[in-house]
Length: 448
Image (cartoon, rainbow, N blue to C red; front, side, top):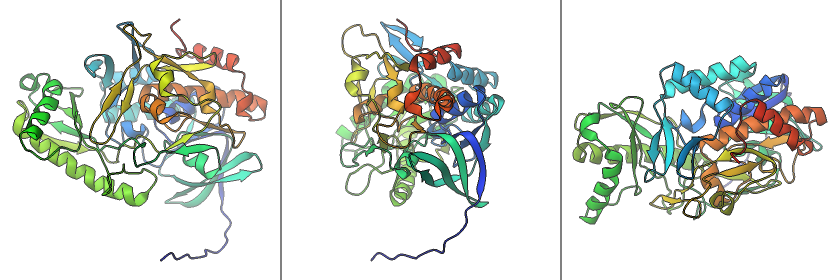
């Protein structure tokens, strides 16, 4: 039975006004806020948690994927600019490990210390001149005609409105684009939506005895299932050492509902179910690791990600929709604002499916067009960056990781600055000028 309560009308206070308001403090959001503020715009970054980093901190991910590309067999750092400055800040705090090879040694990723990332992200955004608002949960939008006028937030201080001139949705779930009626697509949990995971970290590992356990563990799990053990949450568990060999991270869970569908990150009941299920799965998989993998006999779980790692929910329908074909054919665009070198990483039911660029000697990366940040229909002053940008399911399975999200965020923040010179209309940004600005800030837009 559905029941409703009519709440009394109320006057909601305006908490402030900025030229640029960024919703969400993951890689795209912190990069967007940094770029807009460095360009001289008054900027507010709004985050529901008490720290930045998104899934990379709150989800316990602890690895940057998509920073490097395999270019004709050479591993090249292709996401640069503000992202590489962030890596340097993390490194100065002693929190960065040298890049390592992943997925049959075909692509590089980079592990980091989560507390160092949180501190470095604070420093970078604040040093740029942006303002942070933590513990503010966005719940709605104020739309006036063809523009967004404000974001409605709830917090311990109550309800309030954050007004702005240009807004950037980096929420991951596309919350702002949904509230404003912006054109978008919602992934279908019954087959299309990528399955979420709960990350966990393991301490007291004997790294010397463990050796390359990331290569042997998947085979051991397959053999155990073949011998009659109940199936694991998914095949292809990923384990890797962190900053020090005594601590390892594990990406080995897969969260689903009773009907087999992927847990939907926009449904609070499913999120609750997923949190409990993820912790249960983490303990189950870790038990197998401790009992069977050399070097883990004295190990224990030191941390389980505070939040589920959501991979896919809403996606913008933009001026351009990045496709899996674009990723695998290493597409180029005249309005490129950054690069993605990560393969299609599809977290399908019970497994992990990696799909690489076509050919024997591929270029190894695709360019990201500015148009994938610009709505096809919706408010004129709204940009969307990160995993909720304009991509198909297959395209998003690659470009949702940290590296391309950093690139999209820096571009969105810079474009917001340029849009303010065009009455806030993001579709009127001169992409040639945008590219000049990005390159002047160290971004890599092409290697050709």
